[in-house]
Image (cartoon, rainbow, N blue to C red; front, side, top):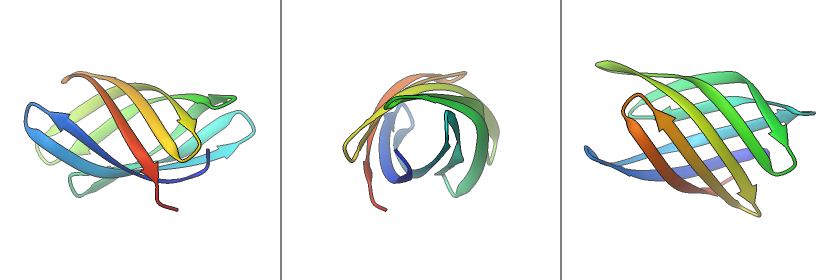
Length: 97
């Protein structure tokens, strides 16, 4: 699960690209989400097998996006279901490191 993943998500505002870094320590998950030119660290996530969950905030230029993410890693593919204060999104990423 540990690694750097490149993601792209389609939103009402257009496609947004970014990176997600996952770092596990036992059943704990930390890392960062980097999108729209900003990097937002997270910690306190949980891991159960190949599934994980995290919650936090992404601070972007004009707004603060709260998120709850449920996801899994299958091989080199990251699957994410994100619920945010701006809507729900499903996206996929690919391990790049």
